[in-house]
Image 1 (cartoon, rainbow, N blue to C red):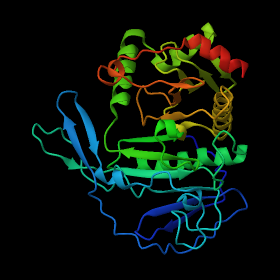
Image 2 (image 1 turned 135 degrees about the horizontal axis):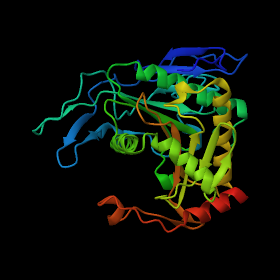
Image 3 (image 1 turned 90 degrees about the vertical axis):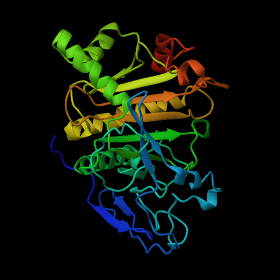
Length: 360
């Protein structure tokens, strides 16, 4: 891990009414003023979900019925992610905040547990792990793309902090920071926020990518992801933006009508390996790409964005941003070919998308 100074003066810890952790990440010179959480919340339980092993695919499936009760598109005045200075209305009991992270009340994964073993019978195991919510700003009407640069950088700092903390826990094998934006994507809270999952297993996508990267190393003697970025730069047609530290491009075999990847120009496993200057550059590049995407149509683009991070091995840190919007008034739905057979059909030519994003 590269050591670099934090932009935060401090991280302030707080506890919610049901015992969940809440962390305030503060801009320099600012300090939160949290108040007691007075909501009559039911006691927490660490056994609200379970993992079931799919023998046909070799994949773990999370069964989390408690998520059915999560807050769904509340009126603006009842948003649980806006500041709650009375301690009676919000997940963030404070007059204001910069960036906050708290344990998800309706978590898919929670609690500590032992190692996973694939059962040969119909035996579920506890859904151990951790699910957190990260709020990018107290401003209900903002977005990651519209944040002030220092605010966006603070979000990156919070991602980095949580990655380090969660990877240090024995029950967690992978940390995934992500954002879903837009009702078209299925978002149930419109306040600008993302989530952080600590999985007790490597996700299927990660395992698949690592297998391909290991095979590539055996065949070519070099890293798959580093060579991929070099080839995209040499080709140039799918490059969206590039600076000294990061390269953004539409992948050659893009699956989605809008898909942009952001890679570091040097090989690193995760946010933990980036220097302070590289973290600054990453924050700026990420915002630049999101701002271009929001200029594609008359309304903000619904999207999913995820940070691929790896504790070691051949995996290279990168960000994947995708959208189901295939035109100004049409969405792409995952039909049988995609959903059942995992064989994607893309109606948009990657080079055409890249050219448009460059012009924006």
